[in-house]
Length: 31
Image (tube, rainbow, N blue to C red):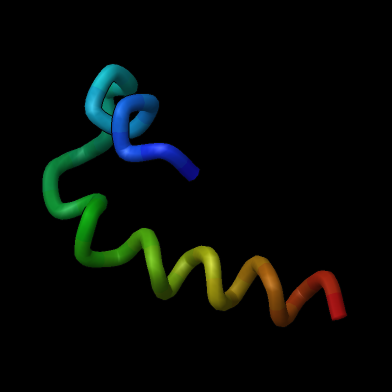
């Protein structure tokens, strides 16, 4: 996911910290 896109979208504060965890959970659920 390009950083340009993330900076333009309004994410909640601290999203940068939890996003990797959410992506990891998402990947595990797909397995």
